[in-house]
Length: 502
Image 1 (cartoon, rainbow, N blue to C red):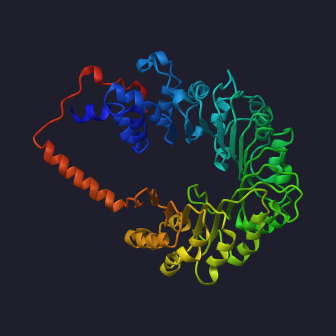
Image 2 (image 1 turned 30 degrees about the horizontal axis):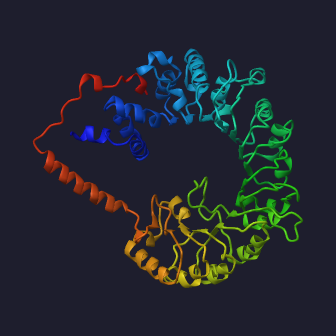
C-alpha cells in the first residue's frame, strides 16, 4: 500500500481532525491529491476565508457565487463558509468591476451559513435582492478610513439598505465615534428586526450616544444570552432590557477608569447572569451586599485576564491590579446565588507585596479553574511552594493556568516556560501535597499545557522537541524511500481546480 493510499484509508473523522492542524497552503494541496481527500477537506478549506488582496478576493467571490453546476461535481461551495472577511477597500476598484463584484458578493453571502465580517461595502451588497436566508452571524467593522476614502453611499442609498436575515442570531459591530448618522439608521433596523431572535451581540468602540441612537427603537432582547459592550458610565443604561443574558463582557480602557465610578447596575438587571468579565472595582456592583435576589454568577474574569481568549489591543502595563484592591473585592464572590467555580485575574506578580497566595486560598476553596495573568515572570520559590500555600487548600481545583499574555504581546515569554524538567519537579511535589489538578500551564504558548493521564503527567511538546522529531522522521523516510519514486496519480484521481480558483 502506498503512503497516499494508506493515508486515504484512515477514517474520515480522523482525517477531518488532521485537517485542522494543516497550514492553509498544505490544506489546499491535499485537496488536489485525489477525489476522496478532496471531498473531506474542501469544507475545511472554505470554512474560514479572510481576504485582503483585491485580485484574490475577486477570484474567490467569483467562485463562491458561481452556479454549482459549473463547479467540480456540482458542489455549492458557499454553504461551507463559516467565517468570511474581505478587507480590501472599494475605492481601489473601477466602478464597473465594483458593481460586478457587489452582485457576485451578494449572491455568495446569501448562501453562506456561518459568520460574515463586513465593511460598509459588503453590507451594502446585502442590502437589495433576496434575503440572506442562512446567514447566522454578522460582524461589521467600521474604521475611519472607510468613511473618508471613496465611500460613496449617501443617505438615500443607506436609507434603502434593509437586508433580511431570517436566521441571524449574532451581531458584532466594531464602530468609531465618527459613524455617519445614516448608517446608524441602518443598524437600528438591523437590531430592531431581529430583536426577538438575537442570542449574541457585541458593541466594540461604541460611544454611549451612538449606541443610544442605534438602539432607540429596539424593544426587549428576549433571547439574548451573550453581550459584549464598552463600559462607559451611562452605557449600560442605554441598552434594551435583556432578562436572559448569561454571559456579560464589559470592555473598558484604563485611561477612562474615572468613568467606572459612574457605573450603575439596576438591581433587577441581568437576573440570570452566570459568566461575568469586568474590571475588579465593578464586581461589587454585580454582587452587592444584602441583595434581595443575588445573581447566580459562577465564572468571573477580572481586569482583562484570560488564558484562552484573544488579547485585543493589549498594551504594555495596561492592566495593573494591586493586590489590596483585588483582596477588597474577593469577598463579593460569596454573595453569588451559586458557587463561584472559575476565577481569572491579572496581577503584576505573585511574590512579596504584589500578592498573598495564602490569602487567595481563603477564597478559593470552591474553585475548579484558576487563571492568573502576570506582568512579571514569577520566582521559582513561590511557584514551587504553591502546592502547600494554595493547591492543598483547594480540594476542587482541577485547572491552574499561568498566563504570560502581556509578555507575549511584547514578543517575550516567561523564562520558566522552557524549563520542562523543572516544571515536572514542581508538579511532582504538588501531587505529594494531595492536589487534584488535571491541567497545568506555566505559559500561554500554544499547547503549552500539562495534562494528567491515568498513569502520569503528560508533558507539552516544545517547539525544539517537535523539530527534532521531524528531523528524525525525515531521516528515516529518506533511507526507506531512497532510489524509489512515487507513482503518478491516475487521471480519474486528479480533481478539477475550478473550485480552487483563488
